Length: 142
Image (cartoon, rainbow, N blue to C red; front, side, top):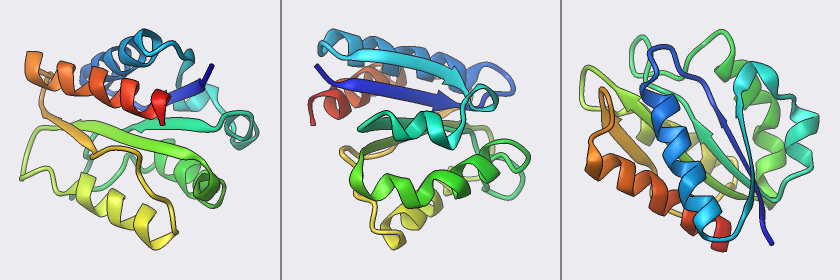
């Protein structure tokens, strides 16, 4: 059974709703899951999992949230190379390019995603929530 950590940051609840859908998909695939807000998680916690799914909305100028999520992500990035990884998040302006920038950072670090990133404009609609469930399922089965 896969053990999947779903770690996210959410300011308005949009990315949190996505995280819950990701967890639902992972559980449906038979995974044991841990769902946690980024401030409740350490790099040492991440080391215990082989399957990691990260969620963060676009902030500022198409960036990851800078005070909690970005430092956490920078800290765990070297660990992710040997893990099964997925990413997701929401945005409310521009085109949602932050997720491609985030994916590129992972690519540059040698981290391969198990599935395409999932993004939602504002609060995730039914289609986005289904994509989140599929992300959880795919990462759990990888």
